[in-house]
Length: 283
Image (cartoon, rainbow, N blue to C red; front, side, top):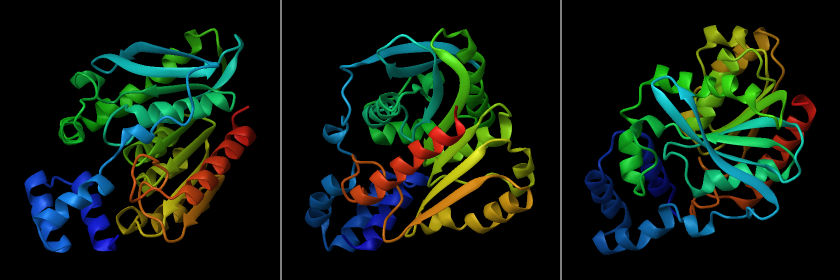
């Protein structure tokens, strides 16, 4: 697909761009309204492809914990055997907790972790069915409250009998940015993995105690613009980190429900690197 079309969709999903304006610009790039409508299914998420790991053989539940202003809802998955496990906080994109992120949560559980995926949209009623509605709700979130909502999951964890006291996090897009913020703000965090996420302020990087792993898409110019300053700050602060750049792929390359942007080879490699990283640092 024409990279201009993919870039337009990225702009639509991450900036205040109305659907009407998006469709109008898409029609111009595609050569007409009919062609634009034919392209939409290849651009928009298809949750029919979400489930790669089934709940069978895992313990799953939906929980709530106190957030900044009300209860936070979360999806939990871990191995079926009752035992104490290291925890991995799974942080969704700017669409809320959906079928794809629940599947990623099960993938982490399948690797032997107590995986918990909070829903940032809990204070606003949860994740709506419409992607457009979800992105609109994200614009209503207070950034400080959202950060607090995710920090507070670390207060919730010690009360669980299946938690062994060790914690990592992994986030995608909006969640990648949140993973970087948690690295800055949670001293007990041992490993933070960010997929194509916005970078923290360089001045805050010295606060990081966790090991950091960063995954970027070479075609993702918007996010990649912040890499040099972040990497320089990580080096100056002596932070343990790994950075991977995946050539020829787009933002959201790990999301198998994004038909145009998903790249199977890069996604599998990045996820294996993530699991290896957690195995090394979340003990």
